[in-house]
Length: 312
Image (cartoon, rainbow, N blue to C red; front, top):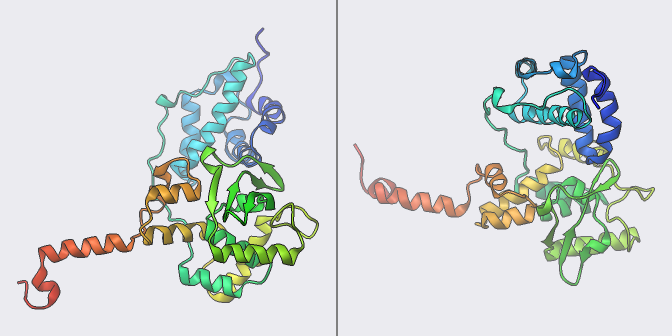
């Protein structure tokens, strides 16, 4: 039976509490931001059946004027389509998005993720105090995401096997499945990190439960650690501001510089798609690449490079 005609704002108010609890908390928070910032202002008072491609294109144009990137526009459209698709399933007179009829902004210049150089990372580790030092060491030597660090339990670590298993991620104090199937992975632990973790366990007196936790025993608040512990330390050391992801990028940079196969980096970092690994770290020039280019240059201009000749 057809549902009564409702406007977008009223339907979204009903849709949110029924659907978003089924999503991952991070995705739910993001969807609510999309709804509040763009979808309600654009379609709030429109009837569901009146939201057509022309209306959606108008919202896209407004987002572009505000500086939204192609990927962000696509994310907002995903939220909108989820709402409209549910409306159709629930018997409302509405239509799913017709992506073929929409013009999406072209991809702009990609911003490189912030990273720490090996020297900067070493300065941070030397200057940091416990327990954050143990977390920073774990972050830079494993490449775990911040949520994966916060969701790490001692039972995930094998000191005998020198590895840890990434099984979950923590967001806003709530444990969730990792980002993708590739996120479930086994990560080797080098001896220096094993020593740090053993000392951290002994110092904390915590043989089970969370590896990194608050004084109340709850998962650490990564945002709080970033703003209250990492940021002041970076300022003290004169290192440009960056978040926990910079530790992850630092490991990737070193892996590439050391000549690691991209598949190795992909597995270590838990990327579901090798292209993600290649795209993120394509700007990193490893020693092997430098040597190969130098050898090629010598083939073209050997006398110029050796200083025994001259090119006119």
